[in-house]
Length: 226
Image 1: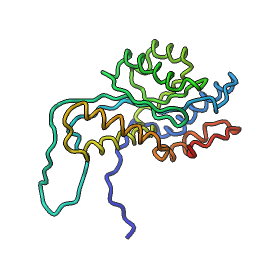
Image 2: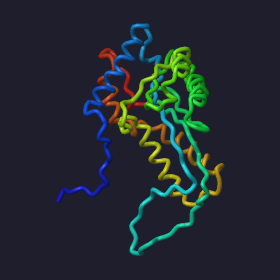
Image 3: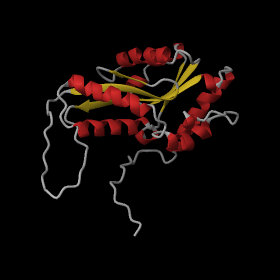
Image 4: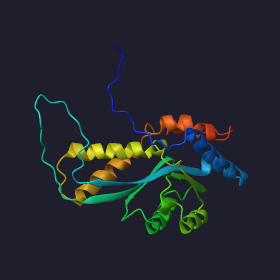
């Protein structure tokens, strides 16, 4: 009958109805500023950043079964892996462990992103409105490193495609089932992030709807062909 069976995506009531348009405007202002400095877009790394926390016992996998109350052997130790990820649409993606989502950790992360993308004159980085992302020290360091920070709209995490990668990571952990310790959890997170971030499919729709309209008309970059 053409019906769909799915769990509706929750949307915060505080989200702006013009969130997509407003994000486009922020990105456009950033790219316009780069062109004023005569920095061509081919020389700009563009990436999406965020933090996530994963536990040994992640359980987001679902299955069909003829038996009720199915059980599986998992590790329920309260051990957490905090990860920062930079999903590059143009440039080099990186992931690394962080202690917390603090200003000090962001001051450590930004030079590593710059180092991984040293061949680019500038970096455009989209991330959320975490207080640690907006401190004076972080913004000053970003300017020195030629990293242009773009803050996503509040209550609109879906406008950052790296969220799709985090969701897949949780599925990978769930499918693994038994995770012995933090070392194995780190291996699952970092190895799978590298594989997932190599694909543009997570961001293809976002590129067409959000990024492409924000680019100068003279731009000929095709991110989806990476």
